[in-house]
Length: 398
Image (cartoon, rainbow, N blue to C red; front, side, top):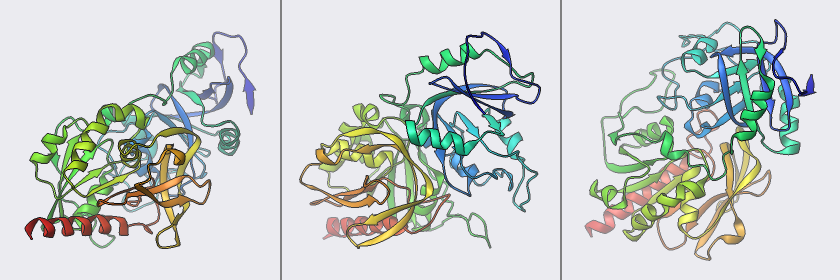
């Protein structure tokens, strides 16, 4: 099942094994290639969600990563044009346990294998995904290279070399790669409903400017549910230019990469917004960058949190929320300034999952309250942000 690479320049795995995964410790996993024929290098992580594979793969936060799905049956509901979290797919590769079956869902338009191929995502099936997951848990998320060749011929030494040469996610700013190339106003589509699908919002009461570090569409849909007009801007848009939009509040989005690397330009932007007393709400990378702006530090995690079943304790309400998560960096608790209150913590490892500034309407969470996929225990956070904006608007008028 798992073999150490030997000193061979080219090796025909077999006629069956058309896919291969090489880890940085030279461990080799063999399987059957799917999707796009090619090679991709990234950080190998695992996701424990049992639904929502299309939303996961299309989440920009997975840029630079190869996703190992722990749930064995992936692809059985096909793909469609609606359940996309981004117009471009940034995921490097995917790993499945079982062969992709024919889709059985009334919304399915394209088989997952063909969808992966169209979006140039290299995939592999037939791996012992549980064994790979256990390896990641023991050793941490490794660098890896995934390759698919119909001929089953691979240059093992080159794959090992490609893996070794890649610097990894630490110190890597990926937000500048995935952010929007031009500012735009969200179309107004609301979250999906079984009876009606995606409907457009026609009422706008508040204006949110969302800084795009790799924003998911379902975040924008929730703002539409709450009657917000959303202007999405590039991650390098200056604070001065953001203020020109006259927002009622600013949202700091999710995204990939090292927050400290993105913070080199993001911190100054957010500082200017804080000075103007605007309500601010951050999710995931936005949460980490907010913490950096306020004086804290972040660090790379051994495994990270990726799945739709992560228990988080709300320290304010003294209850537990089941959350959807996808992050490989965290805030260092010991570096938090005294004016920051920790509002949520992980019940897996006590990682900081939420903070708020004590004297301003500014807060953030590490997890994904917009889910997609995942539970909807934390939708109230959007409503808290809305209430902060309403209070701020009322204060300005008085």
